Image (cartoon, rainbow, N blue to C red):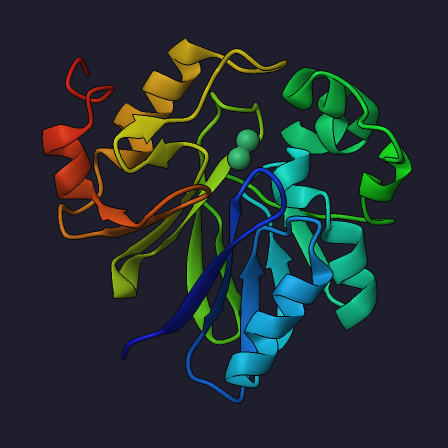
Length: 220
Ligand SMILES: [Zn+2]
Ligand SMILES: [Zn+2]
């Protein structure tokens, strides 16, 4: 069985938001929620999908800044690893560290988190919209960063852990290069070579291509 997956690069950080479904006209899961409700709604409308859940790879505002709006709009649960709760709770600090301050006319409260989260746990299997997601807790970019592996389809939503030709930055608050390397070794480089990687920024890739060509992985 194959999945219907669509992705768009949204918001000013060009963050990929994905919708994942068994087929058009049915339930879907949203992976990451940049603050662009219209962009997300357009993707859903294009495939006639209705969301059942929001999975966040991590709580940086370019991935989770629209979470509260998505939760309110579609009355769904938002899933996050608890080690990122502190990040989600403080959009002002995030704006300072990510883009150097609060742009004129912006209100940090617009990125406030949802009223409640549903917590993710590393190693957990979550079935949403008829799709089995394995939660890989991959700290390093942030402490609560998770990748979502759909093993029976050979697909990995890699968030800001792994990109085509690069890896997530570890210089932001809570980041750790040592942890990112450990997460890569333990959870990512152990995946089958033909796994499709859908990252939080930039184009899709595969585990084998990154293993062979990603300059950050060649030292591992
Ligand atoms: Zn990030
Ligand atoms: Zn990002």
